[in-house]
Image: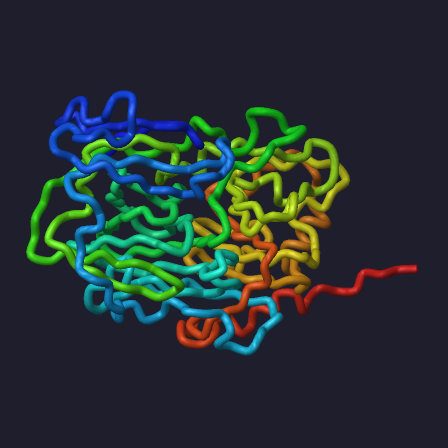
Length: 434
């Protein structure tokens, strides 16, 4: 069984070296005239060199070969459903819900080939926007690595375990865990059998923990629970190793004759990381009213407008509900944000029927939504004793201040859009009395 080692902490400055090469990290400087073991020094920058110190993100690699050793990039044609732009379909303001997306059953499809864009907004050329993808695969990436020039990937496995090799080391990410692989970081994904999950991609900035304000120091996701891999390298030479790059929403491939995972040591604060959603410390009301979903924010990618996110990753974990004189499920609302929801497992409290694990829903800006009739009637007449909510369930939301467009694959090709979704509200009755 594969052994994975981690360091803990969010936003920390780490140093790590493979124990097979002690003292590979240079002392007192980043790029000595000659690195130990004949290694090359290479910097990966996640922010501008002149970014303020508290925002500056970088990592120094000490590797067997620099990453520049590859052939020219050419177009990669094997991924068919990664959207180049978000204006291919006429806008659709309706409430949308997808049945579980199909995992491949014929042939070999790896993580890169199985990327499908559901919706998005903006443009990576201007470094502003987001995209929502699903990955539907059944095979490991063999002598192939991938990196994203456009932005960061927040990956949410739903079915199957992702064994991820990065330039920093190895991570194993299972359902109810997430990982973030930031811009430019090379990685490869191994799977065992059919595998499915969701990806939130951001172009503007990097994910960070939300400010806690009056909540205090210890709520929501805690820094100590985020894990980043420790150094591990392979010195492997092969006839052909593919490096796939996502650049301006298109895919390109270059070849080389060695593994890109040849980093013997590294130090920095620009790292991939994983997080177990079971460690989230829930904040909830103990008096009255249903709190806004922002109290369930795990990670946020802020915009330049204070208090407004390019994207929030929000979860709805198991918790106690104890509010008095209150309709406890999510209230009916119209929102100036776009809300894409997914379900990792279980049943979502406000939609216990058609909202299924491995599927999703999109409620666009100012499109009304809320509980279905069954949920409304049950919650309106329930005895308000303390009760557990969402046991055996994990739903999540990608929320954005951007108005997202659905791709042709998401609206037509996948054939998973539920045309009868709107019917779940049609039975809501008039209860008005004078």
